[in-house]
Image (cartoon, rainbow, N blue to C red; front, top):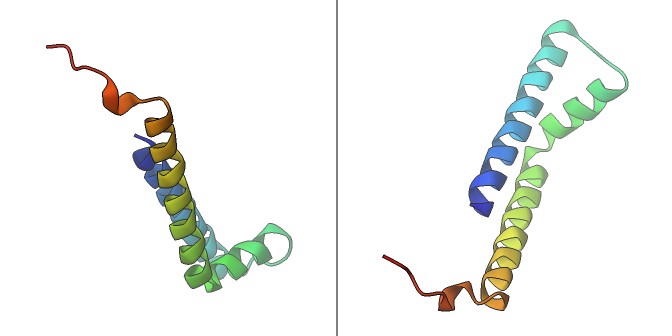
Amino acid sequence: MTITALSVAVALLVGGIEALGLIADKFNFRGGIWDIVVALNGNFGVLGFLIIGIFVLCWAVSAAIYRLRRYDELEVQT
């Protein structure tokens, strides 16, 4: 569930950056937030490594919580 929620958040973030980048390019918006959006659009490789790192960290924290709370030892009731 954690990875799914993170996937949705990352998809919205990447899609939002792409959409805002297209808007900035189409209407020649400059300054403030638009410069940040254009810079992020130009550096999706670095952003991709950051996203991978976030996924790995999220997975590790989720696995640690799973083991520390001993969810793997719970009996399944049918």
